[in-house]
Image 1 (cartoon, rainbow, N blue to C red):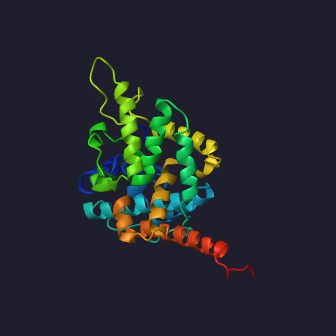
Image 2: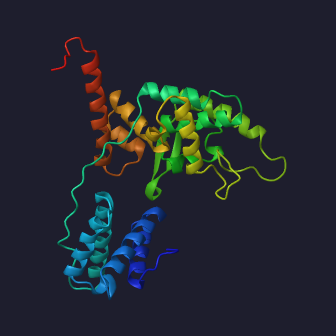
Image 3: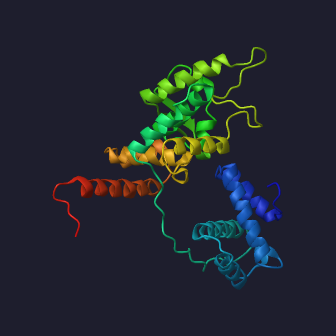
Length: 304
């Protein structure tokens, strides 16, 4: 990994993760950072020579350094997996990480927006004339209609939407493909953006393959730029921009489906979650919202 000093054994572990488990570049970078931290923290000889005391002292230092429970849990997982690999390779005969307990952490509920707030955000995104507003409306409509991750949204190829599909085939984490739905509003917004985009194509040279092209190094709109524009749309809609992000649109997609009675397994498939436990957190958000609605509007609901 560039910029991260790593031992040959850690490099071998990362190579195994890439080849045998199809780990994404993002996952591999996280493992490399976590293991590099542990390698430096356990003292002379690094992970392959560390005993239980060195491992436990390093692990205890994470909270003292102010790292969150989630980060500590991820680093614990990386070290545990490394030692399982080391045992399998015969580099060690014991696992010094076996006594590390997972940190206790509350599972925060995902941020989301109400349906009324989504409507206000869409109105603000497309309120102006011009290419920028047309593109922004297409971005927000697509994100909310499909539940795409921001990386998946911005990496859409223009040919994927040329024929006005009702579904997109998306390659998500681990290279797994899934179907993502497009409603009529999203399809209309994309069609309007295609007209603007095609009118702006260069007269010479090949057209960009991306639905949302950019002159930047990646060739398409970046997550940072999209987030900046989403902040402005939130301000225009009268919504605190701290509550809005590209990922919040994905949360709203899932929450509103569950509020409308969608099956949890269907939502899991649409989001591309490998584990249904990841999807289940949205049921808490939906239940909280429905309870609030009942308490506010039911004629027999009274404050104690």
